[in-house]
Length: 158
View 1 (spheres, one colour):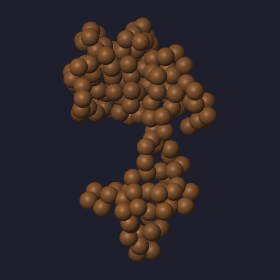
View 2: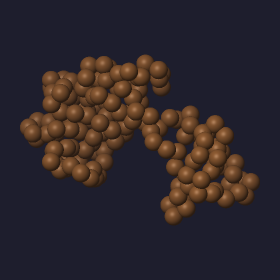
View 3: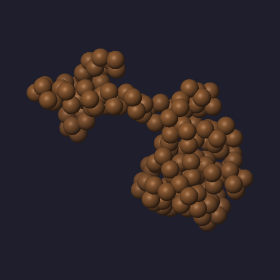
């Protein structure tokens, strides 16, 4: 089982979690925290950054400590913050929900609720297609996130 540390999250099933660190939405602190994690756990295989500041901070620490290809970084992030680390190989890919689609779904949902309409198990949302609704969680499910890689990161400017 690989050893992972998490910056900004409390659980990650399927791996042995050796530490959880909260960097307070501060990228400089995420760099320092990630350096500390890598140094304290010489067999560390990865860091999961769960916000748009911890992920690039972890990738920066991996880069500075020359651990590219040895310690892997994953999680959510913005393309603008991760582009240099995708290009240098500190991170192979990362995910994020498309903010345009998420915003559109939010406005659509608000309009439905304002009109007194209930969500169905499957909703046909113009421009988005079929959107599932989990009634138990009261949650619309936009679908899988966008995966950003070296092949597509230049298409995104946010």
